[in-house]
Amino acid sequence: MAVNGWTARFVNVSFANKRFEGSTFYRDQFESCQLIGTEFQENNWKDCVISGSQVDYANFSSSKINRCRFDDASFKEVYFRYLKLVGGLKTSGCNFEGASFVGTKLKGVDLSQSEFGYLEVNPDDLKGLIINQFQAASLIGLLGVKIK
Image (cartoon, rainbow, N blue to C red; front, side):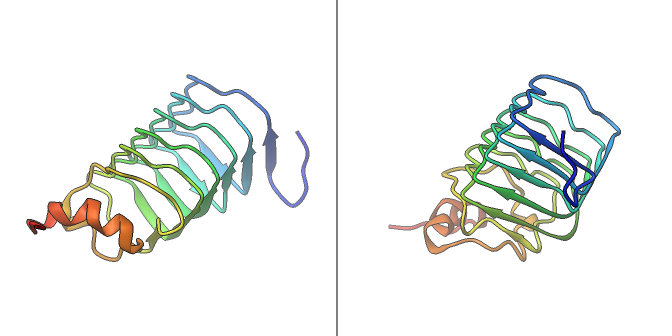
């Protein structure tokens, strides 16, 4: 672990299937880490970065995320349910296929530079979500719109 302006920097570390419920992560960086199936429920995340990591099937439900960034990471079928988002969430080059954002207000979340074919989300929570034109096609059905 090296400290370069970060509280902690984890590189090539496996936390797969570990439990961190009720933890706080402040100015931490996870780079090329294995976070598959990790339990991050009811955590506080502030100014953190997850990059180049496998985070599939992890659970961030009921956490608070404040000004965090996800880059070039896989978040397939991750639970982001009932999050409190402060200061937005920026993503780039991530895969959110099948991720669940149920109960999470997505205002200020930018998924436009990431990819997904399907998200689990309540239509009322989409307001303020930033997506690209291709992603719009996968979400428009949630709003009751039919395309011929």
